[in-house]
Amino acid sequence: MRLSRIINEILILPDFLSANKKLKKKEKITYKKLPSEYKSLAKKHLLERIKEEHKRVEDIIEKTYKILTFSGVFFTIISLSWLDTVNFGIQIILLYYAVIMVFLGIYSLSTYQKYGYGTYFKFLSLKRKSQEIIANNLYQMEILCISKSNINSICFMCLRNIVIILTIYYLYSKLLALLNQHTITPLQNYISDFLC
Image (cartoon, one colour):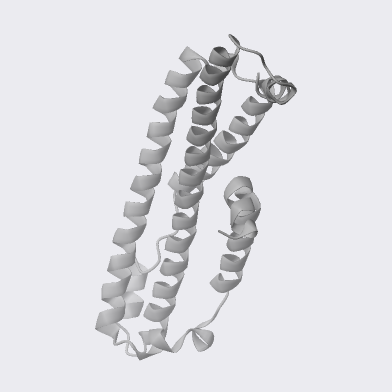
């Protein structure tokens, strides 16, 4: 695994903001600049793809909701047991991931613009030259799905990092309790001061 990938997996937010910025630029693409695949599809297939994207975005939002629900239960259990005994520095790191996960997760669950949907779109799609409108709506819907999928991935990564940190901290605290019965080296003292 490359160093940049490891950094992105740890920091999370900078990589997400960069990807989101690129998506914002793609949203402004007009029909003339759309990839040829969109222009070559028949009207029937474009409409089918839009329905698929509608289903896809609902599935992504449902997954994000499940992650947030699990996180709420997980944090409640942890906070009632031993979170208050965790080192302050570790708590700040956990809070960093928790805030990103909750804010982005709630944002993902908020009302969104649904492309290729509604009475006006139906009216336009029945016109003779509707290929451009349908293809553009499909493209915008795919961009929306990518955005929601990115948020879902970020929420999962935050939850994963929190679980990893708490697991390592828990195992180390148990190991340290055992080591207290023996001679402790300066290195062990240094690690203990940092974590405890």
